[in-house]
Length: 255
Image (tube, rainbow, N blue to C red; front, side, top):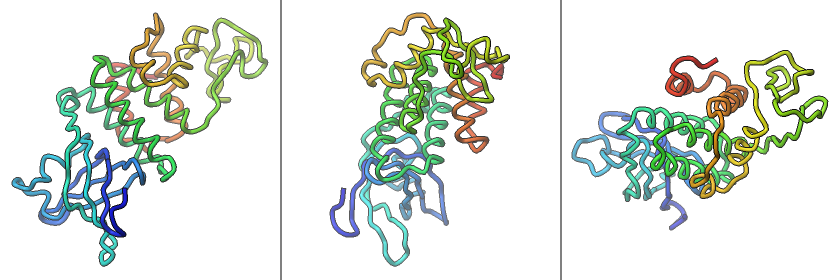
């Protein structure tokens, strides 16, 4: 939200925080209005600075910003903390999950037009993590909605090659599609019709319905393996947090 040509406020989620110079703190954040940006709080790295506790990863806050035309950088003049999200820092699995989501956002080249969608995706994912003991469903929610935002078509009523309806389809890495037993020799990742329905709920359902929904009995690891294949196909090996998250979710047995 603009206050003047140079002064403005922004509701943000802090993705990364680092010390620059002797005593300054620079943050990378996702704004609900302008995508991924960075700004510096001069003197903000000091122990007595009001910025010390608030300008940390995983914090949701309102920043009071000044676009400095002389330096070409944005200065942080003040901050109002909305949510500290301390529950994340108390659980190592949730730290890995949010670090993964944060890194995805930073590598996604979020446009101004998409900034509000990504901001709410991150906000809903963190809320989901706050009420869910297992990180699997929040991670599935995040990646599924990421696929939805990418515009990639997913709906598949049958084999992606011949169209044959089958109770079980197999993921074919060559075509990146689910095929019947007659059109692929790969058997490492299979989906039942029920698992497809669960995945479609994560893709197309409203957050409130997903958060409070009963998905019945399904293989969460299967869904995660497919979603992770999409992540790797889209982002390659550029994600430092990816291997850590896979180790946590699959006890080092991901393949």
